[in-house]
Image (cartoon, rainbow, N blue to C red; front, side, top):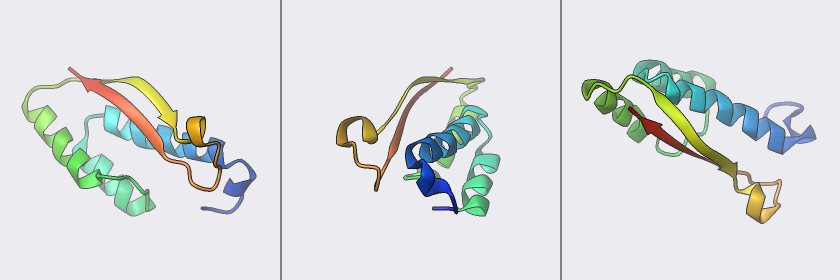
Length: 91
């Protein structure tokens, strides 16, 4: 984690997840993929997400909406390993 992120790891993860979620909501596969690589974001399935964004654009999706977001901290209370989860719909 970057310097200072251990001061409040939960807030750091939420902020980082917010950036990634916003990239997905933009429905811009190239921008999402390039941002993940350039910034070293750890995103499970980033290639699959990129492919999904390409398919959604081909199918005519115009926007995405975040339905739900949470982190593993909600149940584990473990600050040493936090994973974020997002539910997004596209239409």
